[in-house]
Length: 324
Image 1: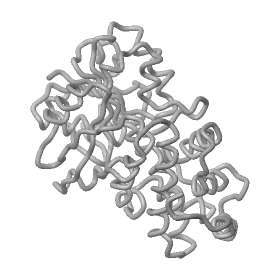
Image 2: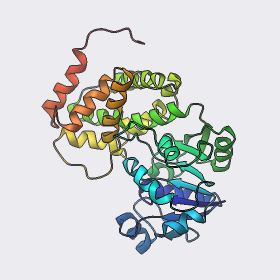
Image 3: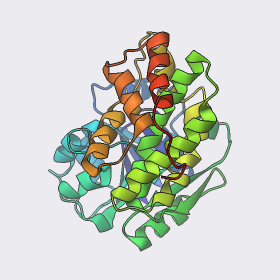
């Protein structure tokens, strides 16, 4: 298949590497002035992967999207709507789009697949690819499980069957709302985990349990299946988000609690704001999300004592039934 991967950062470069190894004809696109693109252009590799010579690297967006049967997008989630305005200038509405990214639009609370639909792409042509796994582990040959979901049953099965390998075992997603919300929300929990690592409070077990529960409530309120919160897209991704040294979101939380700056992308920061918006819209309590939002956006601030105070607010809440 002819596949173009739009975005050549950490995840995008891995996707291009992985799909090329599967025998596909792959084009990797990045903006000409982007540092990630320049590194790949100059050296053919980055800190994660070495691109096979068969992969075509380009900064020409028209060439990348018009020459592909499948367009994979891996960019910052908050830039997706503006980026799609550029993409849809070309004849792409019959292409298949696969979103390999996790997030919720802050201004609207929209899922990423909804942004594509509002950009003129048919829901039948859209799939999402999410789930656990870090590039550093994959390139060492350490396998993991992931999910491909879509409103189009045939499309998600075709993609999962075509993309599977000994390195990634794919499952067919069964709830696009839950898959997308769960995948985005796990990054919020990752920030909370990083804070806990600094203040040395052994609460990652409760974080996993209560975090998944509040996300399940939100998924249900939005019309999805609450059990999706306990699948690979959310709870299944906790190990690589709450515990891994490679997790950007966990590291963001750790450095925030230390009063230090983290310069790489941590999608959990805007996602906490978007989830707060959704919680208010759907009248769902999201106590952990609220604390992460407060820590990230300044009400509690970012050092050890103030982070301790933020965590303490969770323990001052009135008793609840566990599965309320």
